[in-house]
Image (cartoon, rainbow, N blue to C red; front, side, top):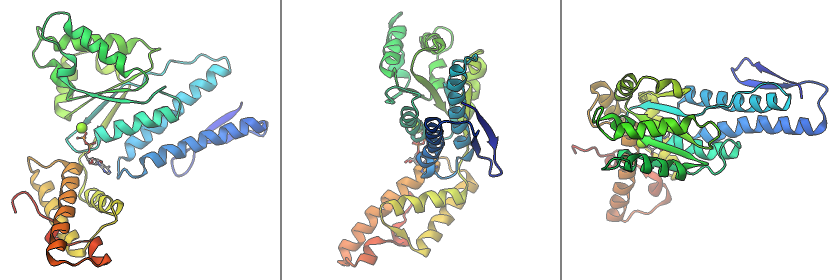
Length: 304
Ligand SMILES: Nc1ncnc2c1ncn2[C@@H]1O[C@H](COP(=O)(O)OP(=O)(O)O)[C@@H](O)[C@H]1O
Ligand SMILES: [Mg+2]
């Protein structure tokens, strides 16, 4: 089949069909466009993260073109899809990885699409030989899905003699095994990840996709807050909006130590819903408008 990829004005990649296509080929190509749409839909509820969405589409395009090349008898590379996620807490790393697992199954990239979240204790054992065994077992379990290791640098914590090194070596050995149907994602704080990679040379090159999860800006956090309450059929009053905005502005300006981006926003909104319920029960006011409304009184911070 002859297809041509063209970047359109809006930056999207369009697959342009040649006139010679048969009916079935046409249908299939429509399917590919649908799958691009599917990607957009899967990530629609995710505020911001434009760069990440673009990377995912590029990955999909690469996988697809590799298939096409194979069909055409051209050489095709086995696409390695392991990834590094760098970002502060609450920037959406875990949530995105979970969605990727699902999406990759829909796109036929992974066979099962289950998601296994692991940390140091799940990989590292207490005696010689145990670590390799534990790590291998975990990889086995992750076959067909995604193995997500949070705070990956903790594997390198103890230096040369630490068993964490054995876990890293075992992971590396298995990720090289190109035919294996699993994706490894290592995640963590940007600075620690940077140090981890620099002390384990050769590691970075095994991860073709390095995704940065920047801290959210004020407007993005506000959009996330509004979206979170909207999904639950609530809305913030103007005063509630202003109170939240002032607080977030202050947190961003002072880089509050416990401020965790979208996670903090989620916690605040969940608390607001509880406080609203308590307030309404006390006043016995159950009008539909009141049931939906989150007021400034419901927005309370740690220190209040
Ligand atoms: N871009 C976003 N849009 C909407 N909600 C988000 C976004 N990023 C994060 N969240 C929400 O914030 C919370 C924390 O995200 P999480 O994926 O656990 O962050 P991390 O793993 O980076 O610490 C989750 O409830 C998630 O749904
Ligand atoms: Mg996380």
